[in-house]
Image (cartoon, rainbow over all chains, first blue to last red; front, side, top):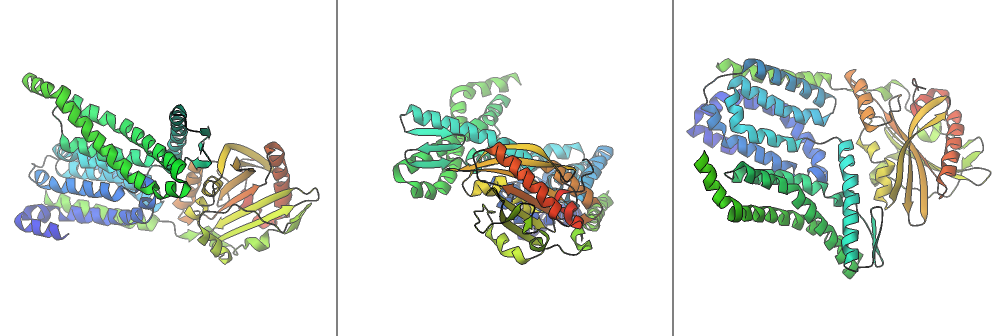
Length: 294
Length: 227
């Protein structure tokens, strides 16, 4: 809020006009974020929630003057109905403790408000932070369970096959790996769903901020995010299995958290490396061509 | 145009106010005498009696154990045996608010937490006390210990079969501004012969539910409209 005040002195017209809307949003969603901070964000899958929120706020704030300067061409019907539907979802979600609706309503409420006040042009300016809000929506647990199980299974099979091919004494029953004298359970956390979710968010942010010239380049980057997350997660599980095999259970357990952080950083580096390769190999020429055609 | 900005603010604040008005605040458990699981569940019934030794798999949150004396959050754990030497472990977790603390008692969660592997997880139906009760049948394993488990979760006076239906039942209460209580009833036994154990568990449960005073029956197995 401090920074908001300093900015408002130099550009008084933004906060001067928009403060009722911002205050209204605060009334609606501050309690929601307090709930999230006390519950969902403690869950590893959504631990990146505060970062997502910070990115969203930063992106909206960055574009605030662009929106303030737009002419007011409201789409009243579309905006009004979107807003009302959003508010209904919010009321139902917050009063009945359905976070999916409560947090999801934010997308509709913000979209509806912008349409009502400025029109479709405003959505074009802030489509990214609006879409990015999707990553704040907690998925229903049955959806998470439906994804976690098969992922765990798949990762157990791949790790088992790879290490077996490298002549390690490994065997598998379900998601339980036995290597030498040790047994390792591929837990929910090892499914990589956490990292896939967080990496998807950060990967999409990276692609957006980079904003490569061609659609194909951006699409390839986006498509590479999940495979990269999947591969780095396999590497992480293999590292954990091998550290346990050579150093014992205690060592394996102690690097568990560090391995998760490393995985994240390595995945981001891989994404940037893939971006660099694309620039150097294919799109150096392609960018020029596309510009010529346009 | 400036009044649109204010209109939207009023709309937001009104929505928030409406949300507060609609938020459930009445615990249905408060309508009745508080039930104390220790007293309601008999220690002897039919051919069964409480055995001394207990080998329980418990929830991952030890603080819930400490709340046992609290009538709003209770956990009852007993092992029963019969004249043939068969043993059944009965675990009941009760909350006056169908909330996350019951989730912690879900066998999928607490067995996995204790290093068990869930070998199978199936939906099934029990027929006890002339009611069909949707249950989950699990088989958990840790080393040599194989443990077939039967459990269900109640919301108020209903037994929804899936987590989505649980949400819907909770919503039905919630839209009337009521907070349903909830219970997790779990029986398990240690044996590799899961079909036989599931049968013994069903016999145990039908004998057990008949021993519970009629006014509490609905709390444990639902009103059973669908039965």
